[in-house]
Amino acid sequence: MMDKLIIFGGTSLKGEVTISGAKNAVLPIMAATLLSSGVHNLRRVPRLRDVFTMVELLKRMGAEIEFKGNSCSIDTKRISNFEASYDLVKTMRASILVLGPLLARFGKAKVSLPGGCAIGARPVNLHIIGLEKMGASIVLEEGYIVAKANKLKGTTIYFDIPTVTGTENIMMAATLAKGLTVIENAAKEPEVVDLANYLISMGAKIRGAGTSVIEIEGVNSLNPPNFHEVIPDRIEAGTFMTIAGATGGDILIKNVKAELLDAVILKMKDAGVNIKETRDGLRVTGPKRPISVDIKTMPYPGFPTDMQAQFMAMMAIANGTSVIKETIFENRFMHVAELRRLGANISVEGNTATVRGVKKLKGAPVMATDLRASASLVIAGLIAEGKTIIDRIYHLDRGYEELDRKLISLGAKIERIK
Image 1 (cartoon, rainbow, N blue to C red):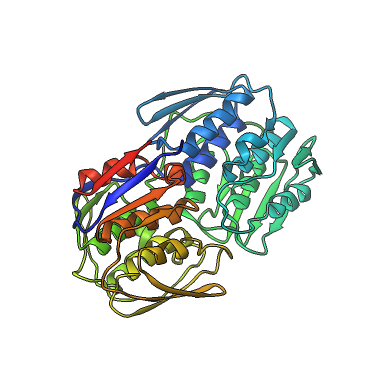
Image 2 (cartoon, one colour):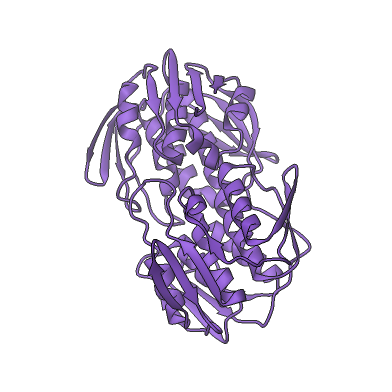
């Protein structure tokens, strides 16, 4: 049986919360440990379903992994299996990130085509084209990417659209390739920068991470650094901002990098949410009722697609009409039908949702369809009158570390039932 959350809404949340390490930073860094033989020590590793999927994937390849609290050591001395099987990859798209490192260090890889959240086509063809340009021979066999390369060679790769995992995969592969690799129209996300910093601490030569052009000069070998602390999760921080904004709460968010959340902070302020930087973090105070604001999702540094659903939940009770445009994924409004069950007035046409704010939402049974959609339902449940039951919350556990426990510490009335 799958866990459910029962939420009794209508409480303003108050207190302080500490943000965990970023899911989207730690997964590529864990994949990057395959590039060198030795013990890699990572700190601030969130204990998430996706992290444990990556742990299982690396273990099947021969890695030895040990957790102590939020520290994790990964020993890659005995890697002997170069396959990422379907039963793991189908649950988490980030598994594709082992392709570049395996190919660069061992010259071979067999990786299942990925699954993960059902939020539209996220093709891996950009990864494959890039690696082929570097000299890899790649065939698709029975749902698997089978790749071989004697020695990858540096080249210039241009992405038609910025792809985070594509940028990360090519960047990792290029660290051990012969010569210079240039990635043009690269993703600029902070998680790409964190991976680059990890690779540099291993001895990689990388310039330009965080800009649209990244240059990687290949080296002969890499070595594990002493340790690496994963950056804080900006999406978790943004989620707690919307929780404070939607519930009229007062939350001090600790372990947060405000500069990584500029677009979100500006839109929150436009919605009437008060945000103050303090020595300890960000203090976020919600209004009696938010003001409707339009948003358009964009690649970083624009408004993140991973914050769209949470922001929509807040807009559902805002004063006025909000227009939300999704430009990254074509199937990312699956939470709309569930928010409507709680009384939200939302209409969708193509990639645009029009949210007409209502004064109140009312509790109802709803079902999570993907990771960020599940977070939006939690926010809606927190502001709805009465009882909301959220089914299939395993999606939530993929990307939020103990979200229910953190919310309870802020005064939320939440129960997890098996």
